[in-house]
Image (cartoon, rainbow over all chains, first blue to last red; front, side, top):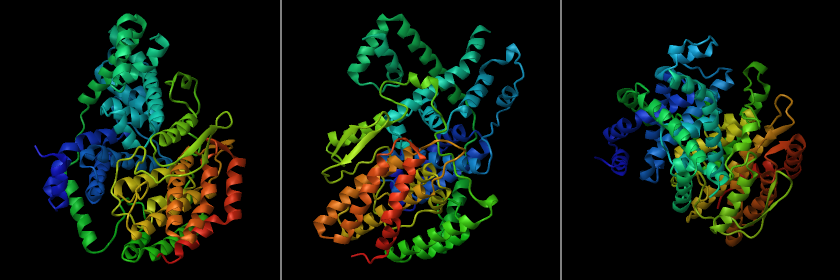
Length: 188
Length: 373
């Protein structure tokens, strides 16, 4: 299996297929990360493309090849943030395109049999959307991508105290939002 | 170990982020304490839910063919000399201008950049209200909440302890800056400049990026947009994104060549200008009494470290104009770094007044236009 350093070296020599292998390796996690940051699948796909195009253009800037993944996520973080910022400026809101989440957001009482796995996924996504950007960022990187604190600090630029504080608060907020559904689910 | 010591550490323990000894103590306590064990199990259960959710999430990944086609288009544009900044936000006019600028020497680039920034700011001011970019929120999105009291012991809401700890950490490892740190008011960590040592190539919280591309490159259109918006938060993010992706960092790195030194100080002055202009444009939104300027503080602290190093280098090389410019800038950076996390209008006004009296932005512009050695 090609190491990241080998692939990067080949890309720098003009081997686009090597970049294709990097893409294959990281496109899913990058897109998943962006999706959880912005909440829209179609937009996440496009922003994931933006991420890799930017990465290709700036591959020369990557000094430590062993940190390729962290570097890519750093670009993805920037891309997602720019998108969120652009939406705020235009007065838009982050939309949830999950049907279950839409159902939950209309305030209608839920039938007992709806509070199962798939719907819990919608609840999680809705809860994520209620976190502020910084908390969502560290929460997603930690819980969905199992990044170490050090990696999260590198990706986000946050200090360790801020990172830990945001992560703790994010977990508490998520817990308060999903726990009622977890309790009902456990009772079913 | 007591429960009140264990509970705040359970999360880190689960994350595998505790040191060996601390983890052993937590583990021993969990074996003996049902309350803490319940908390541990509850957190574990939540983790399993999130892990399952992430694993089961079905997302169609982007297509390599599409990405490859975009890359080929970018290559084609580059070959034709049609420069496009990484972000598509810059209008075509600026794209063309930057394309021409990149082939020019650094001083001319810096001078042209200043003209562009001044022009853009002037155009922005006179545009009809509907086209003006609304200033992004200045205050923190998460206002202080009751549950903030439940934060881990080493994380405080105001982050003043973080400032102190960051600076003390720098001192402890003989890093960038020798400072004496004292606590001022209730929510104020004061940083005082004392003797400085050469910077180590250490930057908190960013992937190392090479500096061989560092030059007096004009900031990306997105950065200029951030300046015009008057949002320190936007500026911070824009600078970080630009540096992280392009490698045009030029900070906390010691360059050996004279050209690299000139470019490094030019970039430093450019960043200082951007920070000061953003403060100048800062406006209070919606009747709030205080403004969250934590980003400006952080940026100012970074610039302060760099400023001290550059000033020492200028002294050593006998570059008096450079030394004087850096000497004029340093107290202002210190003042910004010493502002409270939530600054009042009076605090900001005092800094703006100092900037105006010292004509520091104009001085930075003039200095940038002076021929480099």
